[in-house]
Length: 228
Image 1 (tube, helix red, strand yellow):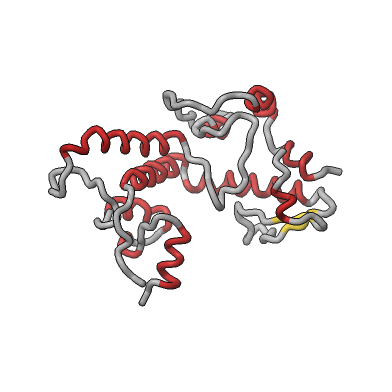
Image 2 (cartoon, rainbow, N blue to C red):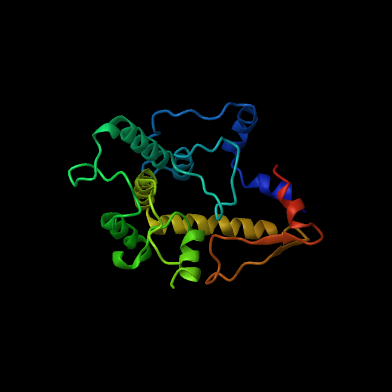
């Protein structure tokens, strides 16, 4: 019989656990050369993909529905774009001959076309908003409050472009298979905990990568405090 803490510890591979003690007291990661991309037939493919993130060895993050970890190539793309802006800002003006350094006023069609390939939609049917909450509020309240939302950060759009490249390089089908496999592993483990209750779908045709669960008799706020 497993408790919640014991089960979550089993989600970490032995290789990660062996690094955990050193990681707890270690400093925050510093920028460095990007790790090599894993070979397609590498038996440790997903371990190598994990190296593409700054998450410390031996640690795992489960709340990606709210705040997700950013891959190294994406973060470095954002930072490099910001550096370029600061180094060339004196040469910037509003003419078409200079890079677009303000988002929120141009159609960003190439980026929307790339995004459309991911969600199977036409670029003209996609809107780039600063986050999902803002996008939902546009629909819920803005059809009658609707206006240009003003100057944005184009470096974040550069990051979105890099994130799409990262995702397509992995392959959407491979990503889906991986996240569903991990979710199944979590659901199977939760079934071993007597008081655990799964609130999200469990049927194979309905279940995805999001697993909503609770422990009977344990308030959600108390459950969130259990970090190890």
